[in-house]
Length: 145
Image (cartoon, rainbow, N blue to C red; front, top):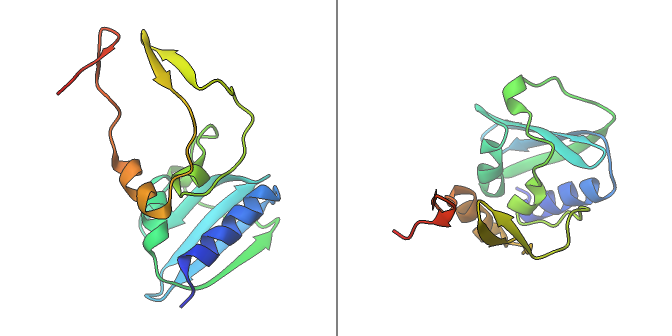
């Protein structure tokens, strides 16, 4: 069995190198995970019956038997497996991927000032933050429950 941190670090390294191809993972209970990379961006994910963003929450907890990367090989996956291009999936995994975006720490959202400062979460925080709901808004103001 291989440590998940080694697998996730290898995935992050491939993203930082702007690689294109398919990242294959097999688990100890004989399940397959496919992660499609295109120019360093994660485009699609598939693991067992899960597709797309649902794989991100389970990826840090799978028991990895083997993993490999096939450069310039794009595995055909169903349309549910593809994710939005604007999402930074490495950040939700607890890994950092540098992006060019606004560097200001605050922005306006529905009349309220929202802090957009990036933090690099740990692997334990990634699973809890993925299930955390955003603040409820009513007429441009956050609702206190």
